[in-house]
Amino acid sequence: MKYYNFKLDVVIGAPKQLIKVPEQQYHSSVPTIGIHDTREMCWKMKIPYYNMAHNSEECLHFLDQKKPKLGLISGARILNKEVIDKFSLGIINFHPGGIPECRGLDTAHWIMYNNLPVAVTSHFIDGRVDGGWIIKRQEFDRPPKCTLQDIGSLLYYGQLAIFRESISAVKGMKKEDFEYVPTDAKASYGYYV
Image (cartoon, rainbow, N blue to C red):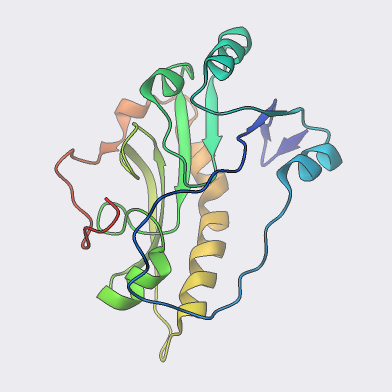
């Protein structure tokens, strides 16, 4: 099935896993839009779905058979270099924050807390937390009296807004053609990255 002139051949969903992060320093009672079941979405769109740990030998063997060109990642997993290297063009992440100053988790909170630009970034991953090669970064005006929920909505819809342009931008290009996030680039906060 094609979306934005981009064909999804397969989805690899990893088993749920708890991630270890420090207790949040800034809390919110803002409700989320909920979680969608990836397997069910794939079934409805007729996209083959496989459940396996992304950094496993099983996944490496699967990728050897499929010989994928381009991958998309959604979620807070860090992939091993060995997995990343199986994709001839690379793997794209859509991040709800401006890289490099707003990396890691809970970006809406950090944007509000540190008065950072409201921005989203698409980038080829390199194994670091929100590092790699920046494909597109887009900033949004912060509305007057902006709430945490407003920022969260801007980030969510901002990622959707840059999807098509990001996919189009990588056609005929290599990840090395894009700006690289230096290895010494730090987020404006050091709790997660």
